[in-house]
Length: 211
Image (tube, rainbow, N blue to C red):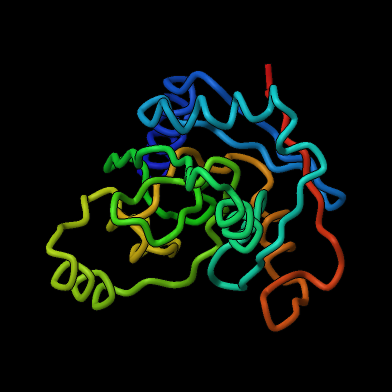
């Protein structure tokens, strides 16, 4: 029975992976992180694919590292704010949020950063990986009461088993997940940082499409 259960889980994961069409690799000095992009968040999937073509994430930095929370990279919030403040047109380009129950803040999820805009629209050049922490049933019930929403069966099972950041669901767009190299992002998440969460030694990464 245990064998059949494990076989079912493996086949389910394989089916999910095949169902999604694009994969990318985040190459770092500490190893490679392979990510499956979700086809059910197509605008954010295409955003990072276009960013790769434009070399935006070539030699980029993981510039905000918070253990048990996230590893964030690309354009920093401070730099975005300065650039937009200096723009005489007041232009603040964003991508509308894409929210799907299958895309949630499990361990290893890939999300798009944003500021406090009420539309929950994403920055164009900032991503993060969920490191997260343990989640209890009480945590989920409290969030459901606070946010007026219910976690799906899949979400609940994943959070209770492996942890994550359920409080970010519905507020930040998740558009992919790590399928190989989780140990690399966990290693990076434990690097020493300054008071602003910037790593004391540069942590660079480059993104490429896996054909």
